[in-house]
Image (cartoon, rainbow, N blue to C red; front, top):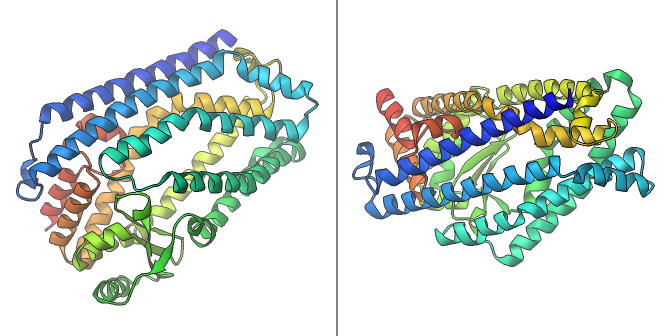
Length: 414
């Protein structure tokens, strides 16, 4: 049975590696062959320099992602088959740790080791790749401060959460995973409230959108849409990156957040079209639907974990002498991606469907399809998003339709 477990995992693992590699190489070839040409829908709206930089940025990010993916795959195989995880488990046992202390320490060490192993790629991505294309504005001091804050949050929130997980497993019998599901659901709902008011301000400054034409237009738009908010805020995103975006957080009265880069670069009508798009997500209950789907996936995952934690062949296949919850979580975390990877196109399909629906809502409520179109073109250019992604690659990975696809849909509606 252990041979079957290993064969099943390796089959999915190398299938994922093959598919992901083929998609990435096809996308790189497609972008390279397109050259610096501008799609016909964007002629006159995207200049040659932006097209050149978008192509170069897409190629650089694609190559970086390919190397990073191969590195992650090799690291996963080392962790699973080198014997280091059973050795660590044994070392903790010999050191006198048992029960919740062994559980928390094992997973904490694995998390820290994974973060350290990924550190070179994180540094390269921020201080070399993003720096080269003018996006990075993070200083070394700010980067280090962010990491220390993130570590403090992980200790303050993550460690109690791990102890709670073990407590449900040890104290609530065979239905532990159902109790844990209810607990994690409550934690997630709490975090939706906690994040914008407590956590996000630790990293960024949020100020109310100043009085003026933009605020008046956005507030009027929200009233027209019968959309009650907890306020319009500007986030100082420019102190870390030159990328632009906008988002909202919350279930019932969301807080609208605009990146300061977006406020600086958009006209009033363009910003209104972007906000109307975000309101469209809320009015169509996309956030609520995604949360419900996420909870279903979480419940199924916990059910699978409750079976695997009692299944000795899983542990024997990877060198563990006996089943344990911390080993099961580690193995599921390392092996699970090979199986869930093949659901990515379905997830991307529904996400893109939601984006089209939000665009339609924006046109209906803001009544400015031209402003939405120009806003999307600006966002694409400011973020140097690829003008020529391979259709298979975008269908598998893109949560948003490509710029050309969105513009065609807006044109059809307009």
